Length: 278
Ligand SMILES: [Zn+2]
Image (cartoon, rainbow, N blue to C red; front, side):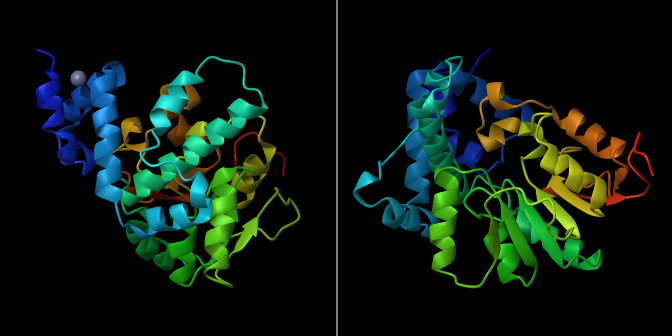
């Protein structure tokens, strides 16, 4: 029997902290996707849980009077779904992503990818990292603070402007890469959390990096993948978890610990990419 609104609302905190069973989690997520009132309640719950978090305080400072309390990224995303994206729509989507990444990071929903990844990266001898699709710097900033040499890679967007603003408050931490720089030195590792599933085939820059780099870190696409966690609507995703895994395998990578339940998987190159000339 489907969950009632009452049952959904009593589970919002457990949903946010990812303590529900996967089946229950899916039921709650499906209900909220279809029920406007519960979707709004979820949005309010997330922001209330994020109050006074540094990330939200920084977002308020960055936007000043333009800051919109309780901005609902999901609402904007669904409203523009299927419409042709003109400049204004692209900007709105970019704003929605920035608010969405902020509330995801601040509300406790986002797994601690960095904490899980750091020991794996040190053990693999990684020193230099490109954080591909680094968004607001949720991972790039703490990775740099942990001592890695980090280059953030992000499309021109509200999120990028906010990340640059955050970096100015933390001078010398990392180098933002504003545009793909093919001649840049190859890093030891690509950090790609919820990034490879959004890629289209035309984004050549990352394909080049994937052919050169030794280590890739992704969200746990093998055992813990739950797109609902991220909050990206389905229409933006171009690859399933299985597609991301086989993409990496086709590029010669294999998972160091394929049965891991950790938030991240570390992939190491075992052989050359398929179909590549020497
Ligand atoms: Zn409902």
